[in-house]
Image (cartoon, rainbow, N blue to C red; front, side, top):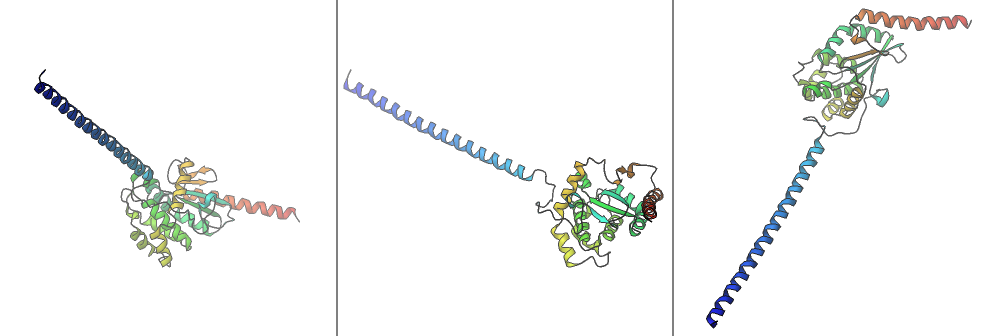
Length: 271
């Protein structure tokens, strides 16, 4: 083999070696890019999962959960009931209701005069539980915001008056007007002495929002059929289609008179 031919073969081998090194470099770079891209995708997916998990269970427009602050005078398990009437009344009516609920408004308007009469006379105590059923069904925050505002009214001893104003001015079920805190403050002007800086701050800050959330949780755990749920003892009188304000009044008065009769018999026996 001539020197020229040997030189040509050596040069060809060298070129091939150089090309192989170039290809190895390209392959290493490609593997690096693939691994890097995979890491970025994994991190991005983890970030998305984190955001989804962080927002799971929150309603649109909901505020971050804060401490559970019960309104003044609330009683019962976890202080979830707002009482109206005298503590020693013989009969207790437990009401679960939503300020956006049309059926709740119908019940309140039909029974309001009787309920006021019986609570003011000391014959009946009502325990109100405020829930957010319509927010869950229709979307929005009007149930929660109005319930919080009613709890704020309870703080200053104006619950009953404001409770009635809210039902008197209830919007259509699909209209989330009570989500507007300005509207709730405007309605407070219809109750003498309610529109104060303290009340405004309570409404605007959502002071009792988490408390309202706890009440809704209790409603769900109770497996009640809907709102309103109106219990006299263990009986849901709202489901009793024969029930009327007059019949409820008669039942409460009989219970009250029965207690007085029992007390009279004990007095006679002690003589």
